Structures are given as C-alpha cells and as structure tokens.
Length: 331
Image (cartoon, rainbow, N blue to C red):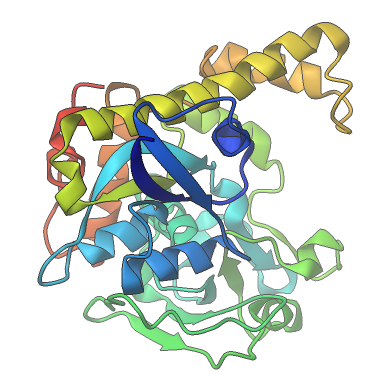
C-alpha cells in the first residue's frame, strides 16, 4: 500500500485514465473524487481543505493567496483551457457592432466579478480594443439555474468599478434576451444563445476563426483550471513529481487514443468530422495540443497573472515563481 491521497477533479477525458486505473500515481494509494458541478469541488477544497490535491479555477486559487495563511500551491496541470472570445454575448438590439461598443454598457458576468472566463476576455479586450471595465456597470449572477452565493473566498471589487451581486434566482441569460443588460461574459453558454433566439448572439460570431488567429499571433491558449496541493505536502518533492507525472501520463493516454483513432475516423465518438478537427488542431497547436508544465505555458500563465492584477483581483503582480510548487518550475 502506498501513501494515501485524496485527489479531486471533474469528469474530464484527460483524467479518465487515472480514475479507471490505466495510469497510477507512483507510490500513492489514490482515492479520486468529483462533484455535481465543478464548483462543488472548488468549494470543498477552499472551505474545508477536503482533498490533498484538487482542481481549482485559476482565479479561485489566486484568491486564496490573499488569505492570511495561503493553504495551497499550484501544480502545472491544466485540466481546463478555453479560448474565450466565444464567451462574450450581446443583445443584438443594443447597437453593439464591435468590442469598442462595450465601454459604458451594463454587462452581466457569471458567478464572480472576475471568474476565469471573465478575466481573459476583459484582458484581451483591454489589450487589443481599448476596453475599460471600470467604465461599465456589472451585475454578477447565474444563468439557467439558481446559483449559490460564492461566499467562501475573497471577492475583491476594484475601487471605482460599479459591481452588483444579483439575488440567487436572477437569470442573466433572460436579462440579456430582454435587453435588461447589454452584454454577458460567461463560461457557460446561456440557453437563449444555444436556442438561437433572435435578439441575442455572440460579440464574435465567427469566434473559431478569431480564436485561431489569436493563438497564431500570441501563442496563448488560455488556462482556466489547474491543480493545487496542500502546502504542507508541496514540500515532499517525490510525491509532487509523482502526482504531476501521473496527470501528464493520463493526458497523453487520451491524446494517443484520439490520434490512433484517426485511422478509423474516430468512430467511437458521435462527432462528425472530428478527425479533420483533430488534424487542424495539431497543425496549429502542435502534437501535444494541451500541454502541461511551466515552459510550454509561461506566456499564457504570465498573461493571466497580469490580467488578474490589472483587474484589481490580486493585490500584487504575482509571478509564476510565486504560485507554483518550486520543485516543478523546471517542467
């Protein structure tokens, strides 16, 4: 029997080999946990340190660094990443023709002022289009189902920024469709957009083309979630490296399956043209299109840390060395 560890992450393909036992954490007797939704995992880790190693959204983790005794350090395993030009939704009747038209608007945001899918769009829009979040009025809430308050971690509101947290039964998607807000930034796609209702859409309708161009120009594949480890365990070098290595092997396991499956047109999955999509992604992103480790992600990580500080969510301009386990800085 190895060292017992409780490890929590949601039900992603890149972690399946760990759950199924195809990949082992060397020297560890691991118990794997999940949740109804991924935020349940975050809450259990932040509130009660329920796990030894856990998935956290990047901003959720960075906010714990503002606590008196920060409890975690990060491991460079990035279970969720997503280009976020597609996360900006608009009411089409409001005269919003482009990013420059967002300034001065009333904008909804899912869950937190500065949730992970909000940090990146605000930063990108600011860098490239002169967007100024402080000129907007923000309302924070849920979409499509009631949202429990996220009252278990710091929720800084930058000085001079107009932010209101809505009641739990407020649906920002309905507000967008009704024109009660002009735009919405959200990790989740609201029902009104999925159903193609006529008054709503995306700011960037051809978002895949724009996001692919963004990667070509910047080399950034935005990171949304990472893994963290309790700080007292982070000192155990062999343990930390074993956990990191296992997550890398689990991710490589599914990449190998997908690439080998191209021979048979990936017929195990009900997604037409998936083989062509994988081929296009490899041409742009590389054969390891979902990299872990510091070196392959340094620019993406540093850009996120810069945005987090510029948007008033971190008191200090954090560096990669401030937040990751020291023994994995060479990955």
